[in-house]
Image (cartoon, rainbow over all chains, first blue to last red; front, top):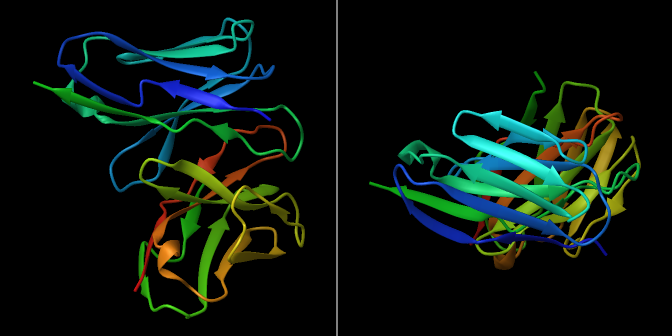
Length: 112
Length: 112
């Protein structure tokens, strides 16, 4: 059974600081997704990582995938308040008709 | 852009009522999913469907059923609503070639 673990689950960070959210998964996969969810809203796709070594960046967020370590990271650079949200990673079993498996999410709060 | 719509953003129902939640997508996607989201529990998969009239149980199907009579529409049915089904319900879709999930806006259901 594929398990996906995120840590930390809660993160409070000061504006301007850097931090990393980790996503570990238990079985072989080379496709991983990051989503953002604002309070009371639905999930919005942030990054799609489709191979070992994939790196994607959007603004102050950068995601990477190491399939050998079964690890993805979401790095936040110089955090700003607008990044406050819950971030989910999800892993793809790469088996047709099999749903993604989601982590429990990391609630990020950026404070002044 | 993929568009996934859900029939209601907020819904209040009484215990014992039959409740229908509808999800419609406009991208001819094969796969559709229903999740519920509760604080601290992340996303939990209720049911999914990979084709018309096909359905598969997810992690927590008890108390729910689904219907997929047309490709673009996937309905979640609560046969007899109970207070422990108060939750945020999220619909998602994926195409055949990509497992990235696109989410609808969510329905916040309260059962009193």
